Length: 206
Image (tube, rainbow, N blue to C red; front, side, top):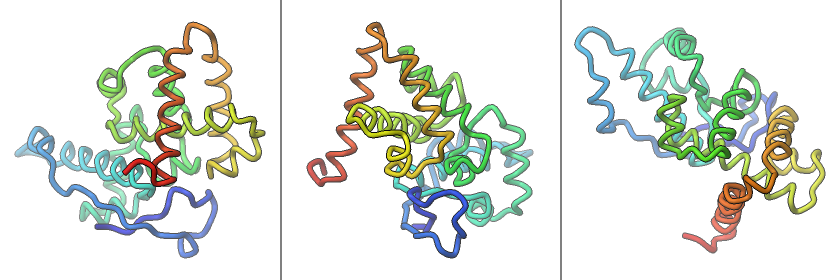
């Protein structure tokens, strides 16, 4: 168990004023063995960065680079180097998810691929993102769609989602582009994601 900043905390808020939530992180995964290399641990570290951040996001929290450095037992510069070497992959850190880093284009690409009919497995192979990350971005978009179709204006949607204006505008642009007859079948799945999340919050679904 690790305490991380809640993903409901807005960008710019001092860390010592942010609410912390407990998250369960998997120290070991069978996938780790595929990354074992006698000459370097970089691939294993990267694998754990993706897993830790994805698992935290799935539980309503965001890990920052200092959190990752502590969890992996390395200097923060190691985390920065690995993320720099894998710029094509969006890591759901607090900086990226709170729009304090360059993550919007990654979220947009993942949602776009999903709306075009690609499965989560296909998206994972094409982008290098973890399943947890992909699901987190789809939930963000699904929340926008659900609130938008309920008639909420953009400023209120942003407040309810606890996301930056850039994130909400990105979701709005995607929705406007794909809200066409030929994409209604996949938008129905997006609406189901929103409905399921709402049911979980209300305690209807265990």
